[in-house]
Length: 360
Image (cartoon, rainbow, N blue to C red; front, side):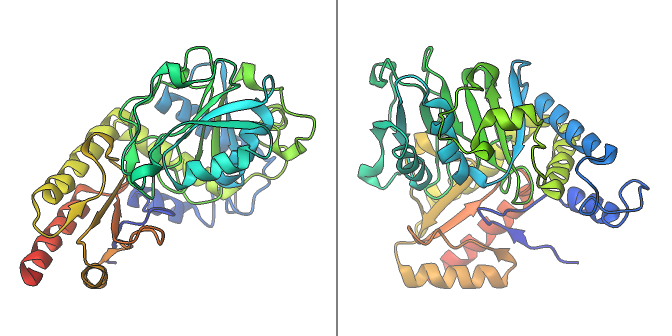
């Protein structure tokens, strides 16, 4: 079997060991005579899967006891509505920092339920940097402050998490959760779609501080109320069972391989290989200012759309897959999540050198 180096932004590459373990257990999970896809979410076997997954995620992220961990559905896009519906409980207003397409969508959704103040933005230069953030930017009566820690499309990330004082900080961590160490206690709420660093699409992780639960607006649908899922222990309705199982396998894999600190070290080393080539290339250019560069998503261009297209075509033929940039920005993008091996980056850079020499 020849596995491709899959640079997709999501659904993204998964650790081979995880896929092989799931394959081995697919038909008969630990001798119970059925697949995880077939078993009741109320069964002792599946409850054991969810309990283990939560326990291991808590270990990986050092989640304090006063935070609830939820396994939800609907992706980050549903969280764009759940956050204001549940947290706009006092002033009915919130501050947002606009750093890309996903934060723009979060802002647009939040405006349906209250007042949104965009306190900083990098849209002036097509989101190629993270704006400087100081506490005097924030509204003192804001119910929460929202950031997107890593911007999948534009390839930026926060070098430092802004201090928000007593105002709860909400973070969409969909594309960098578990890739670098974060102090969970600095956040009121963290949410993340699974399909980048956690597992297959279908499950969304929410980590919410207990004091923020139970304050939803009266108009909040039952399924969009965090309290519903806290009280139901993520099983108010049938959860995305197989996606939770796969996430649990990834959590086990990460713990067995040094946890988040080890992943962050490897991720920074992988990103440095590609950025170093881009910074010295005569053909390829990184598009993000150095201070704000993501270690998960690295966009780059040649400056010639026809040459970009030829590169993507030839890279695909070399088993370097899904390098085409997002349709809104073009160019190329290498998404190098936790499961992307160093060898994949080295193979990509070797091909880029070859392509540059051939097309100079």
